[in-house]
Image (cartoon, rainbow, N blue to C red; front, side, top):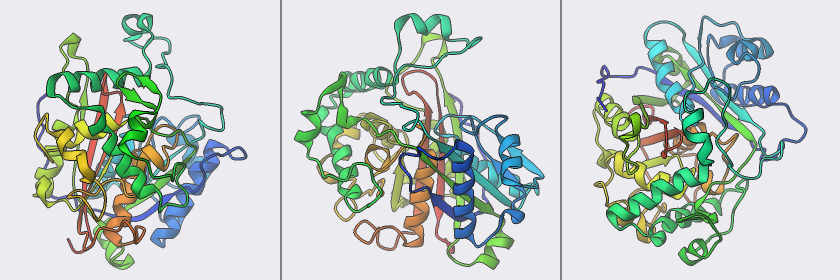
Length: 395
């Protein structure tokens, strides 16, 4: 893949962040969840819907997407972006919002995600969904691909190439559970051990049940604003320092399952921010499966390719214990994974850390630089990657 260099500086700030507290939304519509998330983020920012002039959403928005939601929420817009990159969309939207603000297209950008798969009876990540005209339909559907076995393939290949073990993958779940015990809204709050993970039922060899994320309803929202507005709102605003995105696909069958699009999106974000992996105090990493985290950490440069297993072992991702605290809300592995699209929650927890508003038991001391990364699609087929680097107000 070719790296596309971005211009330096993202002159924008995240002023509002909100995670919906619901985990099963039997009595709410998807549009209602979007609107409630938007209202929560606006309250957090100290703004109203009348201040919003840019709106960003993806394929989870119902009906005509951004058009339908703009009408439903009564937004008067001069800019709209409905980029669809699966679960990485909302991380990409942060970068897109910063670019739109820099270009004068808008000054207050609203980003929303919402869904209710759990209320609709979804009990597993299940089979790939195909519709008429999808180009990969005839090539893949006969083989019965499911999300779990596509990620299982990537895990098995990484094990074959680099000697990664199930026990090493299990440490990622252990770290998430250590954090989730302090989150009263997390779906799985019980602390687990490496043995618990490797002895849980096999789902898609070599991935066990506890290697997999939860399925939840809910959603989240972010408010991205111009520097001028951020100055008025105060130092709870979080600066967007760098952003990058990429698409990785099967390349006509010439594909390496041991890396993701983060090998492109990460360097773009780091270059734009003028930083390197060693500068990061906290990382929010998309965790649909434990293998997603391990490979992403390698691709972002936190360790060398093939060293991910050793890097995540022995509690290195646990806040207060390891060198790189990650997903201190419990992440998708333990907290929530709204609409099977967890990118926005990664940014939300990074914002909490930079504000010093994470739970005291997991708050990273003097956290000034954080990274959030989203993965969309499947690392076993085609996928989107988006990386943002954020800093405290005066970073």
